[in-house]
Amino acid sequence: MNDPALPAASTAGDDCLRRQVPKDFATDQEVRWCPGCGDFSVLNSVRKTLAGLGIPRERFVFVSGIGCSSRFPYYVNTYGFHTIHGRAPAVAMGVKCANPELSVWVITGDGDGLSIGTNHLIHCLRRNLDLHVLLFNNRIYGLTKGQYSPTSEFGKRTKSSPLGTIEQPIHPIHTALAAQATFVARTAYSDPRHMAEVIEAAARHRGASFVEILQNCRVFNEGAFDQLGGKSDVEHRVLLEHGKPLCFGPGGRRGIVIRNMQPVVVDLDRDEYDEREVLVHDTTAASPALAALLATLEPPDFPTALGVFRDVRRPTYEELLLEQNRRFVAERGAGTIERLLDGGLAWEID
Image (tube, rainbow, N blue to C red):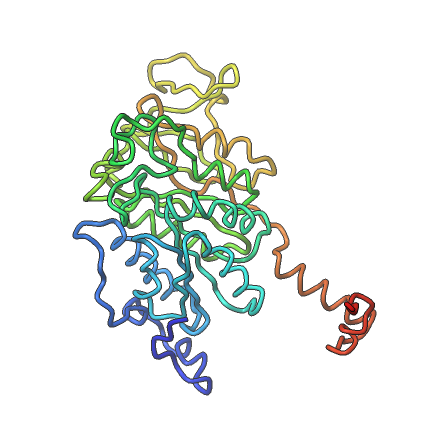
């Protein structure tokens, strides 16, 4: 675990006695990403978010796996683990259960989190630990020089699929929803303001939060999400806002309706429609059905949905774990190692 000269125990909490600023979360390490990489934008947004949460630095822990994004713990002045391929969620779960007072963050990528790490990610989300997963999705293996990844689109030509990949891609939002994550969102590196809002919402959520961050790989997958080029792009994205109709395009004059169980785009000025048809977004819906439908929207027929898909409350794993332990101790008393060894589950072998 890296220890970037954090305050001594006697001064713990002093950071909260004054207003923290993003610079407090910068380290002296050289940030080693390619020029123009979206990771820089994510790093800046995270530092700003951390500074505004009112939590002292010594209570943050960043855990990463393997990949370009996984250098993250070196660049935030907090505690951190740089773990092995795909295992960041497993380590993060251990950290959170050992000390539930910590704010635990998982930094992963589409290759690290949705290939070798898929199993760990799914169980982390379904258990609903109070931690925050940021998944950087550039649809390519960037660190290992341009092989197709689990999220690469069908037919993608890469060094490992010169004739085009014949695999269907994993959809990160669908995966998180299927795993019963209580907070699921998507943003893009090219709109720092929106990204900061989404990351802050994830940070303030109580339970497992999952944020997919769309970004290009400037070297091996340039242009992957250029159609989402910032807040001025209103044609290729629909922003999800709780309680508001799903409208997009110039002046917000295109809407999304459901007909024959299928999403349909209507022109609000020219097409015939009932205004009650236009979908209204509900992040708190008990059913994830609408969120899953919105996650399927893709160009060229539909805009990409960005924002919070789902935000619901459920008891966290560590809450249930601590309550279970308290109840057991109240009923049977505190255990000892001697009672454990003599409890009938040990035996001798001749």
